[in-house]
Amino acid sequence: MEGRVIGAGPYRATKLWNETIQLFRGGLPLRRHWAHFRYYDCTFTGSEAVDFLHQLLRHNCNFGPEVTRYQTLQLLRKFLKAHVVEDIKGRHGTEDFEDNSHLYRFPTLSPLKSFPSRSLSRDSTDLPRLIRWDDYEELPQQENIAPVKSAGMASDFWNKRHSVAIGDVHECKLIRKKDITPKQVDNIWKSMTAAHLQRVLGLTTLDGVLNPAHVKGEYIVHNVFKVNKSGIVVLENKSDDMPYWVISAMKCLANWPNQNEANQPVYMGFERDVLKTVADYFQRLKEPLLTFRLYEVFVNILSLLHEQDLATEALQVSTLLLPPPNRRRLQLLLRLMARVSQNTQLPPFNDAIATRTLMVQMFSHCVLGSVDEMDLDELLASKLVTFMMEHHSTIFQVPAKLRCQVEEHLSHLRRVQIKYAGSDTDFSTPPAFCKLISQVKSEEQKVIGTQTPLQELLEGLIADKDLPAKDKRKRLKQFQKSYPEIYRNRFPSEESKAAVIPEKTTGLKTHLMFFNLKKPFSPFQRSWSFRA
Image (cartoon, rainbow, N blue to C red; front, side, top):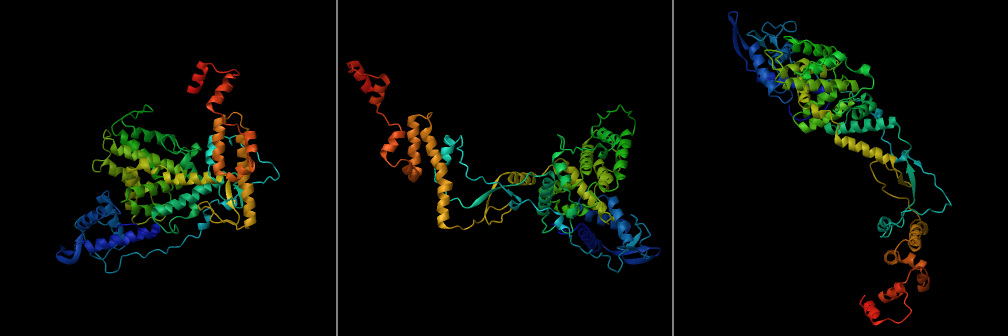
């Protein structure tokens, strides 16, 4: 029963039910028992059945060591009602299974359930299509307007970027997306979250597991961004929040013994009454916090719990799908359960059950459950809630990979893009080909698209009066090496070059120009000048 089970929740629950029965029937020792002065072959006592099944469930990866003897007894009572077992008189369905020496046997008929038909979801179109480049509008092209030279054309950075020749520029258009609306942002989060969940669960499809109509982009966006410093969801409508007296009771237990926020009187058994107040509120909710609609998603996660990192990521994604009020209640409840379980200063709530086990038993069915109660709901819920309680601080974090993917996609859509004629590209693939044009047109594009800005660069260097002569000659020499044809067109002769480029002077000439000397050197001046 290890490994992932790919399928819908009801299918998986039925599979677990049948496998549990097969292991129980195949492993429980049967022998002769005496009752009422006669013997019965191939029978077992109620206590023997509880002992065996309890150990079986505790060592099974789908249920785990948190299963209690009481939960095992409850499951055997379901077995009796489903005619998986019967008493030695053949009775079942109306009697309660007893944890004593009462005798039972297996019926001859097959007790296994038939698998439910797996209707595929036809609502996959409800997942919005991600915005593509085809949704962009073309930027209006201005014709017959002289290009404006950028102020940074003469900068070192611009020159370095253009120190190598630019390749061919093919026919293309500048395009941009219209302003992205909040609804489109919601749809992008919806599509990418569902796709991320499918990958984490290892499924080829979400059909039968998650109905896309039940994925609300606005829920996801709210759960990602509208949180406080502790990561707890903040509700815009306070009427959707828990009543104040419930929050006060939860704070009282979570901060025990520093609980007296409202100066409430503390008496013997006070903490038990406060816990009962919290439990009554959650047990009266109309549906579990994980909702009926997402039951199949969370049951599928059960098969990942032995892989902690994978299960944590799956829960991080799945809990983003919850309505914000449900996510907030779940966050606060799991945090309370963890704190109460770890608080050694709290008096025991039950003399026979450990506090941690009591927390799971008391609240698990408030967290996970199906519309039509499944026979293993209680055990499955206990397994999942135990894991969520132990990792509550991480399962409500937004997966970094998902957030990064969505932010990159939104950033991509907000940028002006280049679209090549005839290409059909989406957001994830670069342009794969360009429209073929004639060689003559290509040569024309080379001149228009490449030489014009380079000619402007050259003229900018020549006209720059703030640039020292030495630096100007150095840059012009670099330009000549990179773009000899443009340089030659600008300076067809040495005379044209000398007219605009300052002549390089020797050290002696510079000295003479500096001092403006018109008379012969004195010996001192001559020796000083030549040494310089």
